[in-house]
Amino acid sequence: MSSLSGETAGGVGARRTRPAGRRREFNGRTALTMLAFLAPAFVFVLVFTYYPLLVGGQMAFRQWSLWDLTSTPFIGWGNFQTLMADPAFTRVMWNSVIWVVGSLVPQFIIGFLIALALRKKFRFRGLYQAVVFYPWAVSGFLIGILFRWMFNSEFGVVNDLLMRFGIVEAPVPWLADPDLALVAVIVANVWYGVTFFSIMILAALQSVPDELYEAAALDGAGRARMLFQITIPTIRTTLVLTVLLRVIWIFNFPDIIYAMTGGGPADQTQIATTWMIKFTQQGEYGLASALGFITMGVLVVFTGLYLALLTREKKS
Amino acid sequence: MINRDPKWLTYLRILGLGVWMIITLFPLYWILLTSLKPANQIAEYPVRYWPREFSLENYASLFNKSQFGSYLLNSIVVSAAAGVVGTAIALLSAYVLSRFTFRGKGAVMLAFLVTQMIPAFIALGPLYQMFTNLGLVDSRFGLVLIYIAMTIPFSSIMLRGFFDNVPDSLEEAAMVDGCSRFGALWRVIVPVMTPGIIATFIFNFVNCWNELFLAVTLINTDSHKTIPTALNSFISSFNIEWGPMSAAAVLTILPTMVLFAFASRWIVAGLTQGATKG
Image (cartoon, rainbow over all chains, first blue to last red; front, side, top):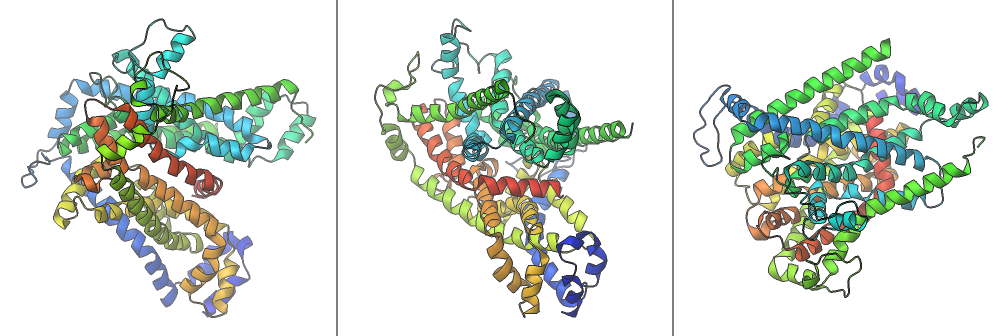
């Protein structure tokens, strides 16, 4: 216990100097306690996440199906070749890009505007947030079901509203028309994802000190200038990271599409992850794994480029 | 505030927030409305925004035609069990991550973060195989195990954010008074951190409540299904009965919505602390 007395004086304020002080604790009991505290978490994550992931990685190079677990011949790049040769492959990759960009941009803009509007305190702000943030508690799958019903071509409320406002003249077959189905699933996803952006941006906005705005106001800066020269630069890190996380997340997010269209009609709304589900359901785990690796590769390359571009931009 | 908004901007803000509230709430209103319409009035066009009569027959037929009671119970038990155990385990690991500096700590954090980016479908096949070998296929207990693993990484990061806000001196004082480290954690820190712990639990509970693909892969028997698995069978059938489906959706959404509304402030605080201090 004697090793602890040195730190008590440090307290919270001395967080930065902690490493040097903490090293001394690495004897006997404390190290054991640490290990004991970390072990359960580690065991669970290793056994149920990383181990299956490793096996899955191996499966990408094997012919593997649910229906015959005993024989899984090694076929090298075979699964990858099968995928690339599939005429749906290009379609699926393009859809994934449209899906990500088409969802992300409106989510970001609307989410930012809502966060800005919520920045100032008003009487029912807490209540408003609790109400408007509710989509967050709902699974993407259920959101998909909700929107599937609303976009229903016969009894759907979307068509009814569009017709009442005179925007279209006859009911539109949203989910059956290959060109419109992708629009419909993106609309649902935009609606669903705005909340996350508002939450993150709102949290970041609240960390911008008021004095910055006050000083700018004294200098006679207008609102637009404050937004672009104070607000955005100050919360830049949050914006950059939120966008990055979202790209990865939306890319890997099949739930809404799965529930609304199942990837159809004719693969028009198929993205990489819904395609993986299709393979999994057919017992084609080898193909699903290979596709998983391709998408992970795409994301890794994207993340690398994104971060590299940003650091270079910051330097110049 | 030196910097008062002009009137037009205030009005614009109120208008924008109002419009967004309507857009956000409408789908919920719509599904609730559909679930309360008598079955013969659901397939009506043009649609009615206020039904001629309200009826609970969709709810009745949901419970009569499917084992919705069991799905509900399974979801509650599985989510609660995984939520409690996952939060408890994450509490311990988050404590270590917040309080100590050690070699390999960065690697631990990274290992937790990376789990968030792995497409689940790579692991599905091997998990199925593993569960076959362990005799855990179709078992709700097996589902709980996987869900615990699923909740640990993120809740560790989230709880770490809460721990960082509790001064070290608190448990150090307790330890000087003779508490063990675990005793100090349990008797001194946990009570202070209760809001954060509840928020993390609710977050985990809701995630398990909503989880679909693992449950679909691992559970076959009808009476073992959780709600999302059951809903998935509903939409896989050729003809969706939108009345009972809406009733099921309402019963699935409402509990988590209430929980989230109750804890949303703490959850947001925990998320942003976890995210900014990574």
